[in-house]
Length: 117
Picture: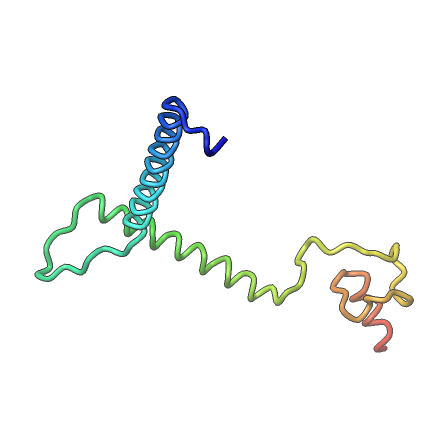
């Protein structure tokens, strides 16, 4: 079929090529627009006033950063434990459990206290 180039085939191939170029240009344009929205604002040289849009964009950026920092702090404070989602895998029989030493459930805590005494 490649060798059989009729005017219709050539026209269809040209349309496909043009559509592909337009799609790539559109995608490139969207990427450039996205990157422009994410870049930090330019520094003000003479302390001029900023526009409402720049203020709100900076406010949103800083709020997102604060939220990310809060999530990271929560994960660090938790220390890798599963928090409240930990479940007993041995039906409440703590002494023979394989994860007894690392368990943070109240029943395991009581069993550990009883073993110390």
